[in-house]
Image (tube, rainbow, N blue to C red; front, side, top):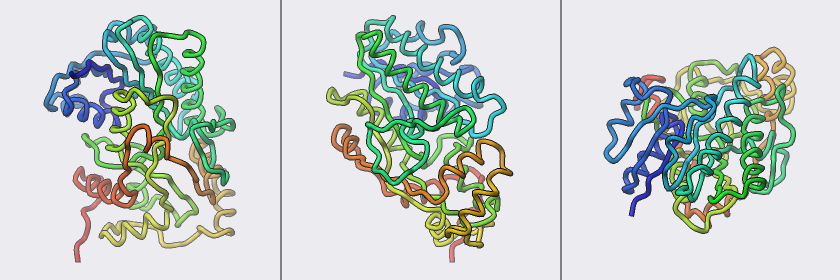
Length: 342
């Protein structure tokens, strides 16, 4: 039988796919949004087939979720994702931590809730790739308000969740999903921060090919991981979600091969000298971008996803296929020029 599931941040990139998959499996969904009457933002959700109800909630309200949490399970996806902010504490840390704790308190107040799934991030696992093979046992210990503040917000929010569970011993389980860079098709014209990287490449906003390597994962697989984390009794703890690595040079080669030329960079600064030069140049960038470049240039992530494959049954789409689907979707929404076919 289907469950009734509360999904926070319902208009988000990942949340849209989560809700679509929940409805397709016969679950009823209560989705929180800032304004249920904003047709431009929520129209795509209302067009989905199934039992969906949208309610208003704000992460910074004193008690945004309790009134809506008489459900069987909660998937908490709402959290700000901004690289450059004027006030990291106000704009990133406070809403991420307060929103997470508000949701957990709401779950505790509703005995019907048996499981909460929290969307965290690889940002809570590591601040920078350091050559070690990452597992769910690793934690980011380097980020701060000044260094990768988005990473810091995700780390503090997840830490707060596990501290809550240890201190309160509530009547529900907590399972956490930690995805890497999330790619794939979008339900709306809005560009998620991860696919926007490739839009910016095609628009010429990168001066050169840099020594950046990303761990990529498809949004549809991340959504499936959330559902499995909710449905499978054996799901427990944290789950790294990533399909594979792709360097900037590999991504550019794929885009060219697929017919997306745009203003892709040609100058290769991915070697040792170029990387040193770009690290120096990073100090001229906005704080968020600068700290990201200094902590990621020349580093290649390593990870073990056996736990998510074993416990959640996830079989990841190849990263290259996900990027192809992402590019086609960006072209469909008009963010990039359509592929030129020879």
